[in-house]
Length: 51
Image 1 (cartoon, one colour):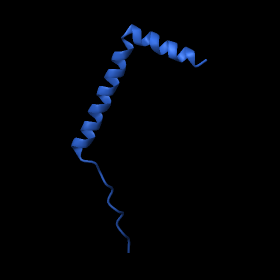
Image 2: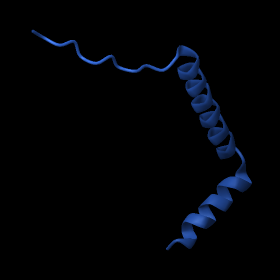
Image 3: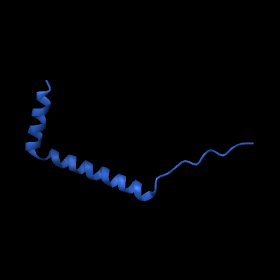
Image 4: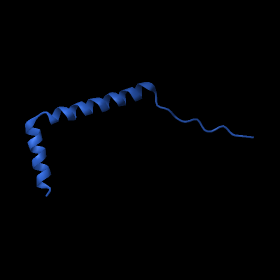
């Protein structure tokens, strides 16, 4: 006699949608920072300071 596999838990659709929306907003914020020249200079200075 075969046993049924245990049910896999799934997240509610709203929670998945919220996670996707947060990821998109985070990506937009990061891409927005790359358009600021002062941020790019600061980032380059910090990277250069590592060496």
